[in-house]
Image (cartoon, rainbow, N blue to C red; front, side, top):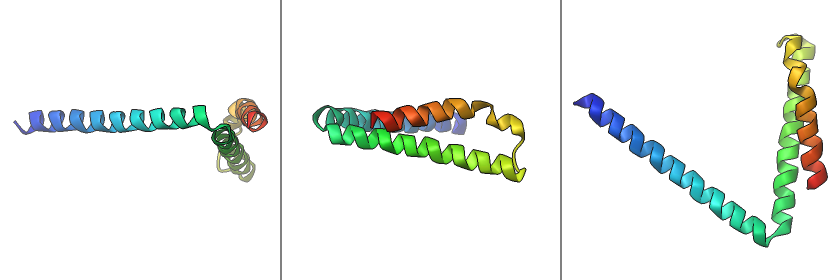
Length: 88
């Protein structure tokens, strides 16, 4: 009986979390349609996040904490960073 209650409450909690996330996404897209400055800020923010993650990954490889194979995705991250900053 406890397992059934746990499953039901977990599904309800995940559904509520998903509904909240979709509502936030709707509000963000609605605001983005009205305010081009907001869209530029979103692109700049995501470009900065990609850039910082690339720098952190490169530093960790340079210090020896990560293997060199971790740099395989670096060109893709650099492309995302450049595209987002140029768009913003």
